[in-house]
Image (cartoon, rainbow, N blue to C red; front, side, top):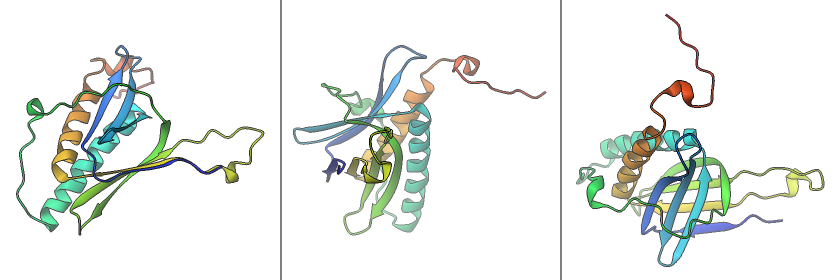
Length: 167
């Protein structure tokens, strides 16, 4: 059974947002092109890792391919999730790449496959979404995503996992 393949080249917008109260938030990665809207479910840790990876990639690209660099001003851009928010799948892994000819960064998200006893896992192909973004869109996404991640519960001891403290 082949997985769904979606290509947004280039995206009109890309964002990360949450639905639900603090402590029970569901993170969504969302992008759109024209009238096509793609929403994916990601984990909080994936959102944080994505933000960091984008920041590192942009630092490298700015050194290797210098050009005009804009400052990040989230107040002038709508980074809210768009309706309807109907996720097509939960993301297992994401990757970033760069196309020098187009000067675009590609974000590839692969579907998490939960094997069932009736199906051979080797026959199941995960869905793939590719979102092509310019550097400014990725700067905004990185900055906004970090703000979304940090807007959770203030006390990390309440995040549902065991944290060890050494003194």
